[in-house]
Image (cartoon, rainbow, N blue to C red; front, side):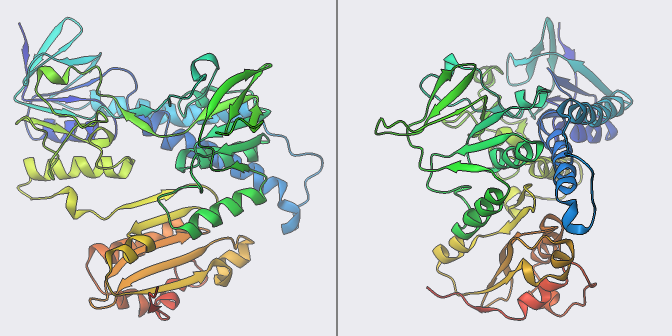
Length: 460
């Protein structure tokens, strides 16, 4: 005998809880099922804990560099990873417990813990219980990819989840993967006091970005002592004493990187392998991600997929926007689509990289007539006053419509300043709205109108 619901939400990441509460509030008998961690990746092993540790790393960095600002600290600055971890755990606990309290306190919403599996397109099992509903929403997220490196099964390794449990500082952390996750941990652990080496298969870091972005981020991290090995095409892993060694050469040269700990940061895979999606007829792509349309409907009527599992965005903000799209279409008679949103994201190294819309390379590839504005962060008063002048700002504009096509801000407070550009892009307003605005001095944002007042044709 199955228990009847109006809606079932599988997974309690960033999209699922908000949707479950909206559905319950709309009078639909709803259940939300989570098999492990309420809050998903972001709250437990992603945004919340990593940015809390980033804050600890910055505090250590500021303490070490205080003399340049006239702040003299007697003796060596020591870092206590166990104490930083305890602070991180407290922040995570507050977030996750608050989420569970919110869900359990919502009328018309049943909260269940267990592993959900499809029995049909309208029925799932959770342990020995059967639940049935005409609408099912999947928010099951993803996990770290473990690459098929020769020898990886013979060594101990960390992922972005496992590294959260470290309370002993690595002597030498070797990170395989030179993209967003790997670089954030690289700077973090270097500031903690570890030696850090990043091994990247490609010819440069964060390969999806423009080359000048890759080069500038690498230079910023190298100043702090992070080491890099690029073009590491043939990766292997072996034990080396009490530690590990990563082989990075295809020619058989002695080109290993030996360290005490290994962090794998080479991508993500969806949590779809144990849902029995085939029993419901839900289609996935060749990587296991659930195929959805522009309103996040799967191949089966009555089943939606939200968040990282649908491959339409791997960020907390895209996941939450998925919830907003589904809720608007189902409950508000408001047609919203994934295609309506502008790609936006940030890399939270210090200083941060913030991106909106198209990169310069993408604009060039499009062949459209465009204008470009560039400015070094050293021209920004806020950056000079803080002594943090690394980076630059770059904005691209359509020469005919005057609308902003994309922006790259790499520098102090870039992750906040980018939002004034994002909002104007969503408003489909010309760049002159920003250019003619009066901003507050001294801020990072005040120089963006100046930048836009000196646009030049994007030439070959």
